[in-house]
Length: 285
Image 1: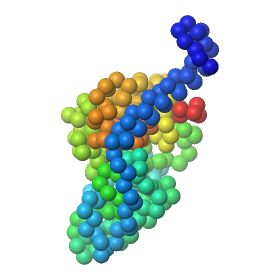
Image 2: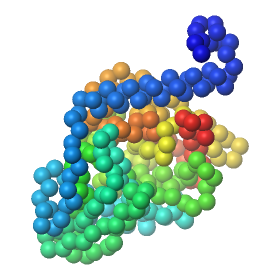
Image 3: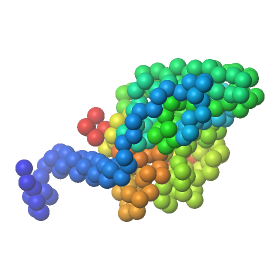
Image 4: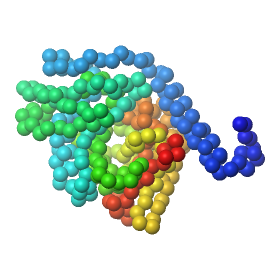
C-alpha cells in the first residue's frame, strides 16, 4: 500500500495510527543501529572468579551503597506498602550477552555469589563484613555493557500498568544505591539537571530514565476520573526533538533501550502514589 498526500489524510484513523507506529519504530531502530554500527562486537567474557577478580574493565557497583538503598526502601515503605524490592540488570549495548551472567560480592577478605533470576533480577543478602570492607558487586561483564536499576513492584495491578508510588521509590532507591551508569550523566540537555541523591526524585519533573518491559507507543497516568497521556518529549529520552542525540547516545545507559524509555512527574503530588502508569506497546497492547 502506498499512501501519499491527501490519501494519507483521508485514510481511516486506525490505518494512519498503524502507519505512524511503523514510522516511529523504524526511526528509533535506525538511530540505535547507526550508533551501534560504530562499535565492534566483542566476545563474551569468561566468568569472574575470586582468583580472577582483577577484571580490568568491570561493570561493578558498591555493595555498601546498594545496602543503603535497601535501607531507604525499608524506611520509605509508605510509598509502596506491599512492594517487593529487587535489583535489575539491563543491556546497554546491542551486542551485550545477557545470558548466563554470574555475579559476586567481593571484598578484601570476603566473597560470595549472587543468584540472578531468569528475568535478570536479584536480591542482596546482608553481610556486615562485606559492608565494612566496602565490597563490590561484580558481574562478569565489562564496563558500559550493562546498566542497573532498582525494581519495585506491588502485586496485583492490571496488565501493562505500574503503580506510581513503586516507581517513585524506585528512583529514590536507585539514586541512593548509586545505580545510574552514564559516563556523561545523562544525554543532551539532561546533563546539567542530574544529581545523585534521592532528593532529586522529589522534583516535579525529574529526568530519571525508566525502562518499560516492551517498546512503547504511549504512556498515560490514571487516577480516579483523571487521565493524562504523557507528551512525546517524555518518551524515548527526548529523541523526537533532539537532533544531536546520535552523538550523545553511546554515553546514555538508554542506548539499546531507547524505544522503551520514559520519564514521569514523580514530584507532582497531585498524582497520588496509587496512580496507575498505563503503557500502550508498539504492538497495540
